[in-house]
Length: 149
Image (cartoon, rainbow, N blue to C red; front, side, top):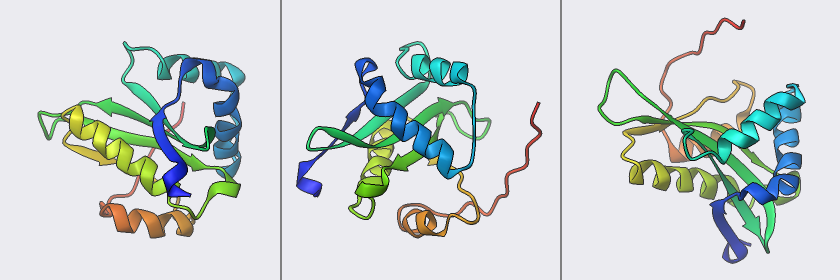
């Protein structure tokens, strides 16, 4: 499968292909968000003034995986950090290295942008993803705390 894979930015005219993957990601995490939030997210992903980006994994020209990432400042480094916010591969395309390829593509983008690190979160129960993550990155040892408004 890997020789038929292209990793590239998802174009603004490809929302119909992106949206089922986004919905699949939200369903995996048992999350719901308003349609207006999805609309704003899509616009931000394609606005050059925003620090948010989207890459897609295309197998035979079909979008089968997505990764969203964004840049943010840090008090610890001069270079920005890159936060890999969402990673999802369609169920029928899993197990072929697409998740790894998407993460590595974010690494390439982050290096080119001068970022000093890429970081992300996953649920403690997401054991399958952690197998990959342990191969491509180091665990930080930190726990996330949050207050939602």
